Length: 608
Image (cartoon, rainbow, N blue to C red; front, side, top):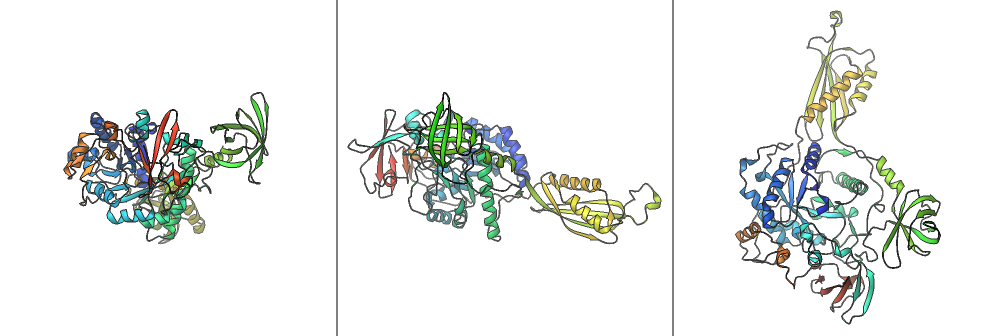
């Protein structure tokens, strides 16, 4: 799981306190789950000390790895003293800079085998790849590096190659590489050609649909992807619960299909059932982007926002002051609307309207507002009360499976009985536990008397020990008796189960080791331009030490006028059926003009 700290994350508005990170690490480490903290903005020289201090704090909080864009963080680790952080993580691994695993953020623009090998040689243990890659290209990167590979499988898409978008900085001075993107790609534009002819108005020409690769996880795993990433910061809890549960169920199915080939990276199983569809979660429509090496319909031209599920066409709108009664012709005969559902529509001017239905009866909706809604317009539901209630009722509980073996024998310990006459024939019961991650513990209860009904006692032992305590789901695998079955009360069995849970809690989980990276040798680039995003002296010195001779400062420093603000595999000419064609196109918004150029040799669009 990845999470942002209080600063230097690629989503400025999605920060979390160090205290919250510590609480998350404490919980997650019970399952051998790793917590990765983002520090994936570029750093200016006057921020290096603050960034170093923050990393010290999140390491102390228990972070297992840091997601990095700026290679200055590598210098932090190289300069740290080995004894500076003697704390131990839950799995017994020493914490501190010397043992810190670094992940190269998708903001590092990892699109080629050469770039991947170079980043691994610098010391990155995991590489988070560019989203606009094909399976063939992922396989080539896999062959070039032994570092772990991570790939986004769901969520919002940037139209530009990650880490190389300077549009927001150019227009407003708010850098995407600094976590302050204004998302100008989600704005509405007018489109003209080189003769000034208007080709379209008020369209989100740079806004892509959302990524969904739910049915491609096996293909990605086969290509060498180790970790699947879901974009979810700034999304609400319903989105996170629904999407994560759906993909988790798909991962479980993949592991079951290939039990000797794949396994989950942590332990425990969720009790919640996954929803059957992702259509009701936030999305702008879905795409698989360039995964198969072909271009399709990638853009969400009509709106940059989530419209939700199409429910039908408006037949009539009757207004009474601020209120309105709306009649809808349903797209699906089984559709059911509920009081409180939220709705959206596209106004005549291209803007998005929305309202809540305070009373829904059949296909009639009573609401307030809905300004601009007219008969004949398509209506969408972007908030389903049934869906929200089902998520709220299906809260996930994660548990680690613990198998129990129960055995009894004549007791050698002093009798627990207060009556010496009953000491004869007393029995001890040993309960042995082994967790799915391999921890073991046992507890012995002495002084029990023989059970009058052995079969019923066996049922009681199985029922009372086979419950949840702490984060463990206990189940009795076997009961064996060397002599008579002992009698134990329900309270004694429950306490034994709780005592076993406490023993297991005191043991570090046998977490799967992280990959530190091989730091194998790789050829360094001879020169780096502004797209390397080098913004401080530590990064410059690191690049120079590997043999790079010319290092241009980041765009955020130079603001060079000829810079490419975006480069993308998304091509507006292709999207609009105007390909082939090399003549530039122009986007206009609020008095500003963007020039679209087309690199047909590489099949890429350039925004200037």
